[in-house]
Image (cartoon, rainbow, N blue to C red; front, side, top):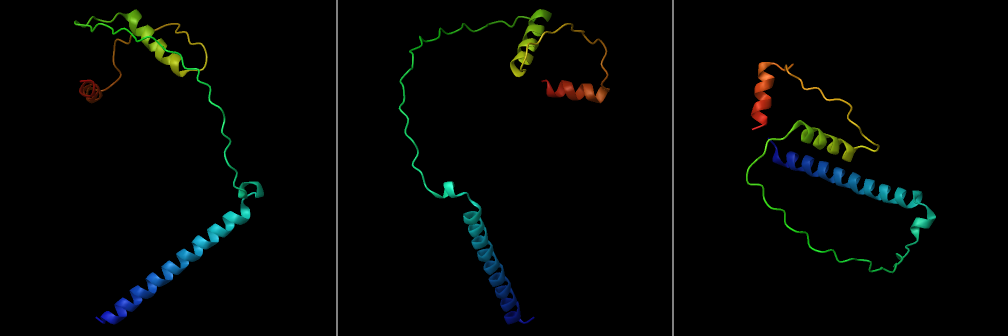
Length: 120
């Protein structure tokens, strides 16, 4: 293997790549200057607007006592939480007309095991 041939080929390849990259950078810069509108070419200083101090002091929030025991949720509380979550992400009024509890699962045993595993 002739090492001088290897180094000359690698050097020529790198030289060609960098020359083309420099050419492309110049071409893109030239196109950016030619295609930009005339009004954007002038550098304008940003306007400084006066700031109004309209901050109001809010009294501190009282801490909520921690719940010691966990109380079971009722169906009404679950429906209220679901409705609130849907209402928060929607644009109009939301009203849940009916809710049906599904007694049987349509998942396979493997699907049920996956759900139970991820809900731990």
